[in-house]
Image: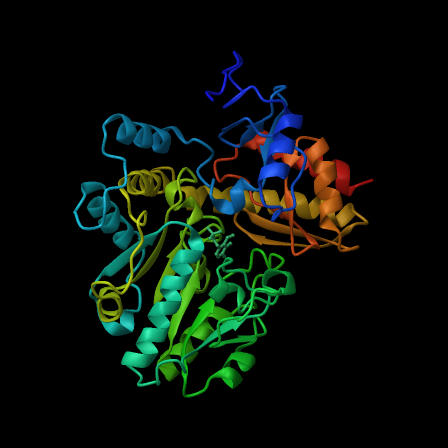
Length: 426
Ligand SMILES: Cc1ncc(COP(=O)(O)O)c(C=O)c1O
């Protein structure tokens, strides 16, 4: 059935009522997400619009996927050109395509030399779709390195991860989640992961065994409650990895690409990991695209013909979006924008927090700011904020997560601060 278009420019895809959409999603979809009661018909820049023309400032930005703003014209234009020019569709990985070649070379140069202790060989990139798939690529890399280079018997490799991590939802990845609801009943779980306290170098040190092959870390935990590790933690991990010949993998799916005021969050401690995982904003939020980037020497050691693959991983449409998104990132200085606006916004939120009875702590870097509330129920505040025109959600139950598109302007920040003031000072 062809959806009927309405005349208003905010009506989007179909003429179904909101009630009809609620029923369709409830009746025909898995109930695997907690939802807020709004049907978004249109998304542009920092704003989401419903079918009555009500506008909501998007302070979630799809968990950083919409860093450059929704439907950024340059990225949307590149995608439309690819569709209209008939170079967008999935072919197969047996042929070469220019969108893939161009994207790989741009993404390889986007990151600093990964794993510099293996030599200055440049980077290589392995593209996938959802972020978790590239987390799996990083896990494979650490395990294979342990097996091939360190002589750990296959099946005995161990990877150190952190309590309250979030790296996605495949069986292997939920196997090392701290959250019962992510894994209960889904066993048998994947062995080979040791989870320790986030922020404790001592705990990591104690967890290292002769079978340890690597460490997987979020440089700033987003889903885990907006937790910034203590100063020196990432540098400490780097040092432990160097001393014990371990690979350090940074999951920058949510905190990379400018979100915390630097291109990569690991730059806050001037370290370079052995591999970095990107997703979400890598395509400007328009199509699924993730990537694992590492030193050429490591990529070539681990992956050979047949040892990995994906039908859509690196298909032309995603690569066109990815290349356009990397260009927008550089041309619009998104990291710089995030650093400058984040500093102002955090200060303004802190001023509200100082007068509020509800706020326990404000913490953040760049435009990645958490407001921890005292009674531990951040979602109550998020629901109130929705009524005032903000889409926001909680992190780990206790913290309101403020992560708008990095292109948010002054007026939009005023709108945001005004709404926060209303719900936090009452
Ligand atoms: C830090 C981190 N890693 C991995 C993922 C998983 O990405 P995806 O949902 O695209 O598989 C997410 C998603 O929120 C994330 O925030």
